[in-house]
Length: 139
Image (cartoon, rainbow, N blue to C red; front, side, top):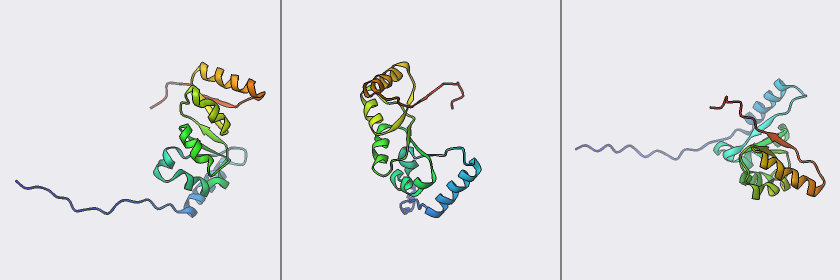
C-alpha cells in the first residue's frame, strides 16, 4: 500500500496594502458622489483581516461601519466613534447596551421596536433604527 504524504506548506497569511485600501475606498466615494454615504462592512473581523486594523486605516474615508453582532460593536468602539450599523439579531437583554454603544439597530420583530421605544421614552430621546424587510429575494 502506498501512502500519500503531501509536502508541508508554509502557513498562509494576508498582507493588507494601506494605500490600495484607501485608493479603492476613495474611488468608490468619487463614484457615489458627495450626497451619498459609504458604509464599510467589517463584520467577521473584517472577513479575517482584523476589523480594528481595517477600521483605523479607513475611518477617515467612510461614513459608517457595519457589523453583525454586539461583540463586534464592543470591539470596534475601542478604535472608532463613527456610526455603526448592527445588522444582526440582538436579544432583548443586549438592546440597551447596543444603544449605549451608539449602534443603530436592525429591527426584525415588533417586540424589538417596542423595547427600543421603551428605552427611548425612559431617556427622553428618539432612537434611530433600521427596519429589516424580507422581500423574499435572499440567497
